[in-house]
Image (cartoon, rainbow, N blue to C red; front, side, top):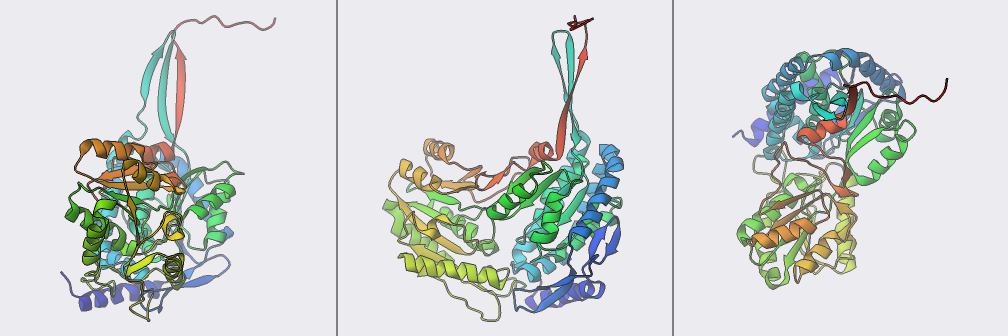
Amino acid sequence: MTTFAENQARAQVHLDRIRERGVQHRIHGEWRSSVEGKTFTTISPVDLEPLADVAEGTAADIDAAANAAAAAFADWSAMDGSVRKSLLHGVADGIVERADEIALIESVDTGQAIRFMSKAAIRGAENFRFFADRAPEARDGRVTHAPGQVNMTARYPIGPVGVITPWNTPFMLSTWKIAPALAAGCTVVHKPAELSPLSATILVEIAEEAGIPPGVFNLVHGAGETAGRALTEHPNVRAIGFVGESRTGSQIMRQGADTLKRVHFELGGKNPVIVCADADLDRAADAVVFMIYSLNGERCTSSSRLLVERSIQDAFIERVARKARGIRVGHPLDPATVVGPMIHPVHQKKVQDYIGLGQAEGATLAFGGGSPNASGCYVEPTLFTDAHPDMRISREEIFGPVLTALPFDDDEDAIALANAIDYGLCGYVWTSDVTRAFRLSENLDVGMVWVNSENVRHLPTPFGGAKASGIGRDGGDWSFEFYMETRNVAFATTRHHIPRLGG
């Protein structure tokens, strides 16, 4: 394991390289400044110091990228799936080669601890390998027979797509969207979050070095209300894949309405973890702590609501508190750090405002709530007890290291508490009773449930939420369903009588 000082030195080398070349758009295989010459400065949440100047795209830059994607679509979509498979495996190889650089840049750009970003970079390579292997069969269809007719059903890439990715673990989440789009035969315009734009440049570099043709994968930086809106409204863009907050998803849906955009949304969550009295309480406590405090609590699948059976409430919460108090808050490049700074001062204030709101609503601040480092955007791991279901800290997504504990009396009570919010991304159930596990998981109004586990992803399975947590599913064949159109061709096998309407 490398030391803190070694990580800092290596990160500085990579940052110096980024600053020297500048952070520009990549359109049709060319680095470009913004048409209007605009730039913005991205800062590190560690110390609020500038990291790099970034080209700030507007509608003109999006137009150039969308047109490039449209021009490249015919050749890329017609390419044999086995060739795309080879190219995408090359992208995966490039990610592995530069995984150290990716992780270091992500840590200083997002504030996420290096211990998690190192794994996230490798996961990006796994995403490309998984969908690369699926590329040759992406169009596979089926033949069905009807009286006097044979039907041939197959899938075809939908066209150029826009991918808008978030600021939390941006590299990995970008690969989760872009890899299946490219494997399906679509071309891509990627608009990364303006708060963490740096690793997007590395991904497009890797892709083109692996042989992805110019125009197939384009990158435009900029703000959501300008570049993002232009992408969602552009007539050449057939679909939008978006990861972010629910309110922004609603805006994108409105913006894409005139051009009848297909949309796929991975949105927010206020996910319950239900801990029953018969659970393995030590493992459950480890999972609760991991799923709310790792990645700074800045992930959609965080278990931010602890629903614990009343008979074990005090003992279990104390167990969680004991484990959480040992969490290291510090510089994200320190290998010992678990919780780094929040992404930006505005988001830090949002999280701190919710902590103040929880106290004002009457919940008990069991521990945490402070900001241990005034030079950056730090928030301590925080736990609220004595909360009520109607409190805002019990219902609204905080997206930080803040856990709200609520007791339940029986399974019906737990289900009612879990479902009584706008979100429905995922849930976690801890019990040693298999029948109880089925009963609870089948009645949760969410897209995903993990039983006796933290969030362990199996890539072929569907990922996505219900209610305000999203539209559509990623993973395995579900990703291709979004990026492809289904076409049926019916062949007559007998001479059908065709009715004459005149003559």
